[in-house]
Length: 176
Image (cartoon, rainbow, N blue to C red; front, side):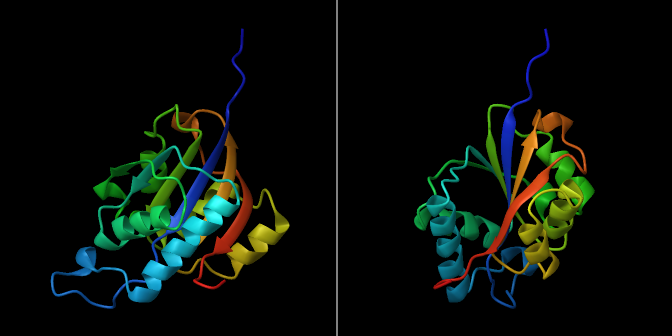
């Protein structure tokens, strides 16, 4: 007997706008005031679109952790966050390896990370499949606080490039 593949949602979120410099280096850069407002707007957008998150895989950088906190403050229901140093400045292949280790009970998974890895991962996973409007928006760039929402059927451990479809792409901005 074959078990039907489970429908999953993958939310790829590029961290919100951060300060340009930090005396202790890039990893410790914090969100700017605008970044905090935009991340809260991302939380409102996710909430308004009925996207609750079961698990978060987050880079260990200060700005990604603060982005996740502000997303919760914006109204997206808070969930367990797993910090993973491998996400920090990872390429799409490295991010895919981290994704494959996600909890199989998580039907909605969010990854909070950085460019260029997060944008490249979104494009490689969807490989042109899904919403034409979403791909058009994604083609215009993946700025800070960009959110790619993808659909996937299967186990996270089996995820490969080209297995997902892009449902929508949104850039969260305070007031927009």
